[in-house]
Length: 137
Length: 216
Ligand SMILES: Nc1nc2c(ncn2[C@@H]2O[C@H](COP(=O)(O)OP(=O)(O)O)[C@@H](O)[C@H]2O)c(=O)[nH]1
Ligand SMILES: [Mg+2]
Image 1 (cartoon, rainbow over the protein chains, first blue to last red):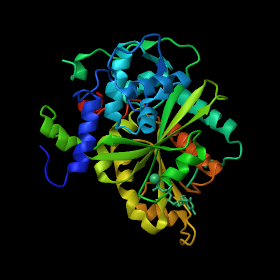
Image 2 (cartoon, each protein chain N blue to C red):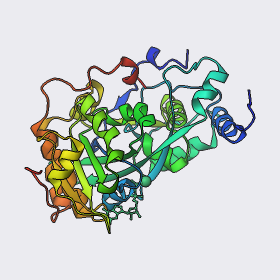
Image 3 (tube, chains in turn green, red):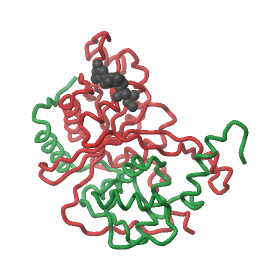
Image 4 (cartoon, rainbow over the protein chains, first blue to last red):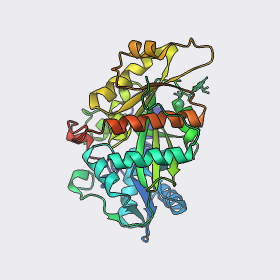
């Protein structure tokens, strides 16, 4: 299947394809922002080396799918496939964050007005010198 | 059928006390408009460059060859995060810096799902680079603000001129920014959050997205 001139791209693909043992889609529905924490389970035998790195990172603190993919320098889909395996083994868990956030991401709606007010308050505390333009433009 | 995520129940979530609520904000703009700089100015981690496959809806993913064609190209976006521990509830903001090209549109749907909104960074020397993100956010009804980065040596335009050149309606805030300055970037984020609060729609946004974007 290797066409001339595409060797480098193909080898990236083959490396990732091997990493996920031929799988092309994750078993679980995971977003870029889905947060993972280390769980009580152990990954099954024969897992990719990347799984050990994912677990080590999630033991330090919770990590999002986007962050894990960036840290491991692997495409998001490949990371989602490995994370799904680790969730099945209970080695990773998805913590419940907040009812607002979970439901808004599910429905595709934006955050609630209460949530937006909380972001404003949190940003103001963190950046007291920031100037916002409520009536900008 | 392990490769079909639709057949699998939603990932079980575990009750966990003290877990912060996660919110997403998009930092968009053309090449060199200051996206990575802006993410880095407020992020608690050095911005990560995260890759994803460039997908095309028509690719044949059931064959290895179709899959290879679909997956040999990747696009990259910036990822940064900041905690807001002093908010009324513990919050964590995830920042996604995304380039403005059309080829990003598939990934944008994943990035904007449930997001607060977007800050579109603009370099007045290359306004056209901002057209794609602006029309995308308008189309999907995502709240956005325009932040004009004042690059050294660039002519300073009046913000009204920028608004007119970008054909922005009056309700879209246009502000000046300096992506290198955390307080200025935080100001643009606050302006966005204000704007989003004024425009919180009664019904869910992007409900018109094809269901394929809502899964996986
Ligand atoms: N004067 C000025 N320079 C900036 C500003 N934002 C970014 N830069 C510089 O512009 C260059 C490109 O910024 P970068 O963040 O890499 O742009 P990106 O391609 O959108 O990620 C860098 O050298 C930055 O230091 C700004 O607000 N003002
Ligand atoms: Mg960049």
